[in-house]
Length: 175
Image (cartoon, rainbow, N blue to C red; front, side, top):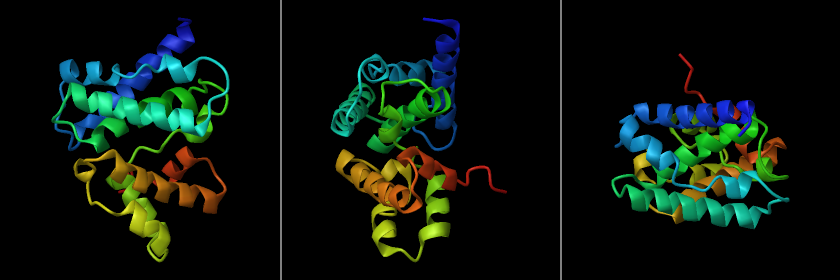
């Protein structure tokens, strides 16, 4: 691994770990870092072009694998670990297979829900998908998670941006 790749990978793990500080049922370094490392990221980071379907299958399988390793962790939290890791490696670090950046998901949390609500509360087709739960811990099935991502996809289409760029609506730093 080259120095830049190691730095970005380490930072991606740290950002995913840091996301567990608020509301996650698992918080210790000893518990969280092994969960972040469950997915085989090499599969989607190295190689030829990746399709949406290939990424979607990889994401679902690896989200469920994290939950299998830590049954106390709901699907929503497992997906958030993956999504923050990939946001850092792929979007910020500019790593990954061709087209991967098109398919990665925004991390779902209260800050994003607040931003979506502020901008789209009058758009029922988006709100009825993105706001089917109130908290991450209520995302207990991957099917429910996919509905929320489908709502985020509607936002990305409307805004003419990448799915991950729906994250610009996040209000986690708003005072």
